[in-house]
Every structure is written in C-alpha cells, then in structure tokens.
Image 1: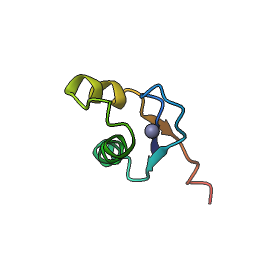
Image 2: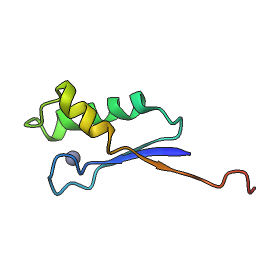
Image 3: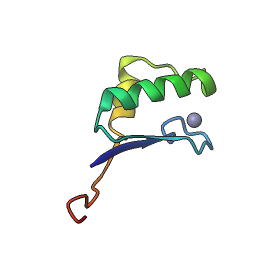
Image 4: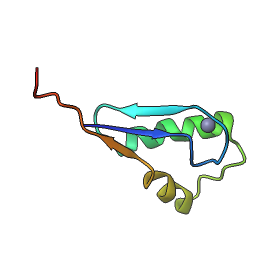
Length: 67
Ligand SMILES: [Zn+2]
C-alpha cells in the first residue's frame, strides 16, 4: 500500500502531489507542510485544516505479492 496526497485541498490549480511508500501519514504531512509554506502561504496550517488535509490522503493498494 502507498499513501498519497494531491494538492487539491488548497482549491488551487496546482499539480503537486506526494507519496509515502512507508504508509506514513506524518511523512506525508511534513511534505504537505513544506509545500504549503513554499507555495501557498495563504493556507493556514491550523489543527482543523490539518485534519481536513489528512482526510484527503488516498491509499493505493499495490499488488506487490504478485511478483
Ligand atoms: Zn500546491
């Protein structure tokens, strides 16, 4: 399984996305934080927004056992 997130939460036309192969929400959120600070300074990373962003994390199942 891979967890990923795209930059849809800002409502901007932004193609940024990130992926964690460790299935690690915290790793993803730290990438999100860096991206938001660099590109979307107007998005406030308060606890409420962070919860909203976390709810947008997608889980992708990979058929890794077929190999
Ligand atoms: Zn973005």
